[in-house]
Image (tube, rainbow, N blue to C red; front, side, top):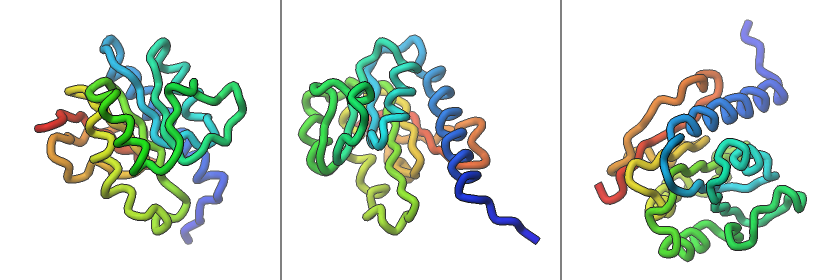
Length: 170
């Protein structure tokens, strides 16, 4: 008899995999130059973790809104609020090629509610990426994209996390 995992168990699995993947990513870009990008501020937990993993790098943050405590709110010049399809292209020229590591936490509990975001978000993130940048996501946003080479993320077998090394314009 197969026992279903509880909602709490699944959340612990997801957050543990995310923390493991972010720590691995920090090691992958250690000693390199470039900004960090967070797509999906949510409650600010991951943003706060990125601040600890990547000091003193600047972190660009994109989301529909900022519903976070003041101490977890990014600086105004690094926070872009609104629909990704508008905010990412608007900021792309200013930060073209400046991002060494991008993390996209865009999944929802119901994948059918994601409005096809996996199909288009990678193309909106790509202009920001420096050659050889690392992209990490809870969804397969780089699947099939030219110049995006999949990379295995160790320690995420229980809850999958996805990564790519990106050579923009390849």
